[in-house]
Image (cartoon, rainbow, N blue to C red; front, side, top):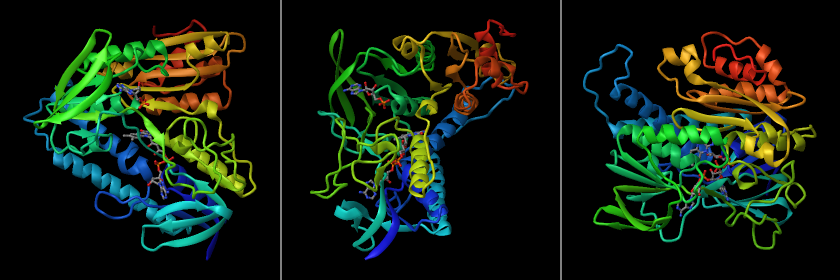
Length: 469
Ligand code: FAD
Ligand code: AMP
């Protein structure tokens, strides 16, 4: 039986990063991965590279280019007829995915990580069975890292047919722009995909069961965002719970209920985007006493140790935000701890991003959380429309808000609703990681003219001294 220092199960961002870091640290490492790509070939990279972060951004960028041209934004450039070739857009997306997943395979070879192609099952005694791939085999490991990620949740009464009723993966594969596109769930993924197809020209409706829009986002930002998205044409219905959906004569009939009663809505394509659940089906063989928590995640402590000695779990399969970078950092932490180092993840400074237009990004606490925790705070905010670079780019919607401790001035949260918020938030993460004060941020020189000056101005505003507003 082959023997490894570390066997990782799952090669999404949490698993493949853990495997690479283990190999860097001199550990003999293997990674089991069963994914088979659209082209029928085994692929690394997990949800993120194959059907998540990367393909969605490829479509998002394409749709933004198209929208800007089609909307004839007034930069003094006249554009002739614009033709949208969706099969070519999807083919480009697929090429980006293949390039990156192939890149991970290359990294594995270069760093000496053995790819065990197939489905990994945890057996007693830290043995792992790999089956269904090239060859069935059993290997043993001193340490096992579970990184099996997550899969889309489904809802009763709405069966996917892969054609008219799809999940997020299916919504990355349409070969033409649906005339009407409805999304169940106005969460992170629903908003992103809804925005993409809206920009390509679909009439998009989002049915969201909750009354509150984006409850984990700063309330003021969420309020501005829903207004902006509705202006862009997204028909967002809150308090609208979908009960069932059926394909009838090439269209989809959706039943939902809201405060006014039951309704029927007909659309060309329906996407179920009601969140994701941890993937633990068949992960451990019967008799292996792997503890799951009440929500079905693999139970872990702060260092991602499971209840089984020498067995760890990282990424979407454990508690915490389902974000690729959170999983990557957990993978690095576990690899370093296995190697005897002091790996650590600061869960308080994980940036969150919602890839709409403008983007929503934040780090740290919201005002609601600070109030609930009775932490005294002060705020400073700055409207993006007062920023010169945003005005020059004709991209001036949004707001930046900085929250700082009322007594110590330590940064407690930064909330950005702006174009490129996903890039701008990095500055706030660095500042909070170093436990900077709002005053520190206010005294740091920011290049002019840049969007990042909005963060500077919001920090200045905490002390009541914003300059350009
Ligand atoms: P996954 O990426 O899900 O990988 C798990 C891997 O394990 C899979 O490859 C699976 O095949 C494999 N596996 C499972 N069970 C077994 C087994 N028994 N044996 C062998 N292999 C197994 N996050 C962001 O941070 N930014 C974004 O912009 C973003 N956009 C997203 C867009 C969409 C449409 C979706 C669906 C998700 C998006 N996410 C985004 C979330 C992100 O994709 C996940 O948080 C991330 O992929 C989780 O990484 P992971 O390694 O834990 O799991
Ligand atoms: P997220 O977890 O951010 O991807 O968001 C998923 C969203 O789907 C949440 O806001 C849920 O409230 C919403 N949701 C779940 N079930 C339903 C349903 N049956 N109808 C409408 N929305 C739903």
